[in-house]
Length: 369
Ligand SMILES: O=C(CCC1CCCC1)NO
Ligand SMILES: [Zn+2]
Image 1 (cartoon, rainbow, N blue to C red):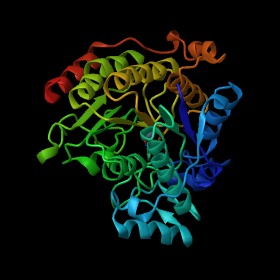
Image 2: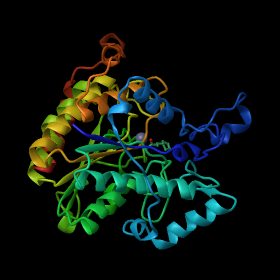
Image 3: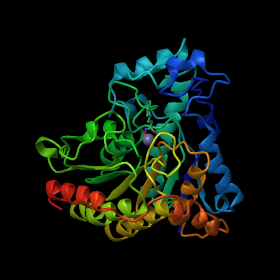
Image 4: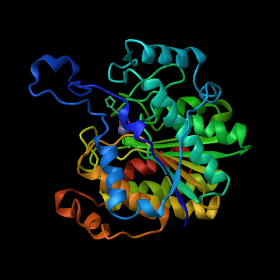
């Protein structure tokens, strides 16, 4: 299996500053020592370093990112918004609409490279250069709206790549699966009336954006039935996510018959993430990747591109990421046993719970699955 990997050191240079975290910015005068913004480079760099020292990185095919063009961005964003980000980035900087998203000096150029990196990964997969790919990009994108930055997201990386696959590469049906613990509201908004892009988001119910991603939102107009929200209850672990995939995500993909599957790969559903309250283990993320890749092999010759989104646990992001990339590459590294030991059962409920199954059945009823 040839797996592409997108990385650039510049992704680490998007400076989100020394805020006292997204929730505590008003407390910044009361914290000593102050903390770095929750969305900083650490967990992404640690993820890549683990790929490196595990020996897996040497088995991946490097894909060089490029800056997305304004034309590519404006298939999803307004031109005014793109220009607004460029101006802020060239000047004094600024924030997104929710007070947590930093647009710092130079952010614009890094965000172009982030969006362009996912586009390059899509081209590499569609050209057959690689079978699948992981784009370890930053800043993330799934909350970005056509005209606003939010949730640490600047440009809608995955949404922009989906447009590229359709408009430039001529695909008719593209599926987006978002396993970040927060609702992929930007991606949903971008394709809500579009039957050619299936948007699926599994997330912690009402976590972020507040009250966003209810199961009743199934699309509108021609897009009715092509948006699937799975608002899982806090505490959902490996069992709940595996059941949601088996009962909802995979059947929805089989019904849609995508020619390409994009994954908004947020690792903040892990059991130790500061911005989520779920219980997914590294083994659990590996299982989700297995289920998705098995479906992709049956539906679209294994064409899968994953773009990194959230994930803030110092301990679990690297191991969740490694578990996923091992599955993409079809390789077991010497770290596998460590992964399997991390977050053992006794630390939290991993079995599917009746209330989690009940939610899954409510979603299935609404989605006709
Ligand atoms: O990981 C993220 C960012 C979520 C935070 C943005 C502000 C509070 C929660 N989105 O997927
Ligand atoms: Zn997230």
